[in-house]
Length: 165
Length: 148
Image 1 (cartoon, rainbow over the protein chains, first blue to last red):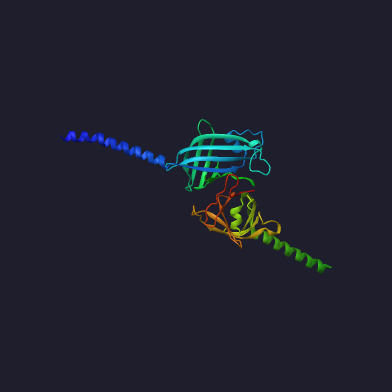
Image 2: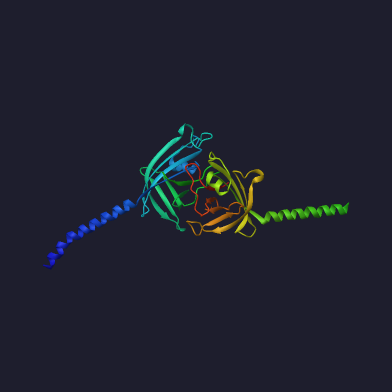
């Protein structure tokens, strides 16, 4: 009788665990928030190398848009689109609209000694990758693979700013 | 004649000594450049502007007082502060921002309103708002000054 009682509880226990796991995973998905960032950076040799931008044509600056899913486990998906080219005088745009690049990928989070978070973003099916150091919830600065900040110029800096739709 | 020459030599020597003393009193930290959005900093500095103003080009020169890394002087150029109206004054090193209690902050003393810039590293400075939050730029401009 005691054995019967135990076995009859097993399916209910399994069902409870299944529901708990499902609910938990739904909570994580629900907690993921899509945040949008934008910015204009220089277009120097390091960035060109990272994204295979040809060295020949004029590249005065790069204009970025990034949407990233932030969640508690520090991993997730992102989408980046950027344009580059020769700047059109007296505007914030490019001659002929510039060249547009888009890619999707996943990121993971690295915590540095100073407790700052660096997001390592890698494109899916490409070699493109970037490192972004989070200064606060609104600001990312580009770093190299070793966590050193990239230095801008008088015109642009390596910053992505949170944008609110 | 000899006496005049002697007096002249002494005065030149004193001038040179004074000059070198001034030079050693203030050591150059660096010159920093950048373009920020216009309206927010214009408001912060109590400067009138037009709605068409979308950016400000800045050049900031920082000096530290000899033997003291916690204070010094600055020259800020840009916006309405050009030519003879360059903004000059003293800065003090403060600690902590809204998001980082250990951050180093240059506080530029200004009559109207002090300006605060977080030292990100030796090459980058970041404008803070009066509540010590990092100011948020847009798709075209940001609030970073980079070492020139």
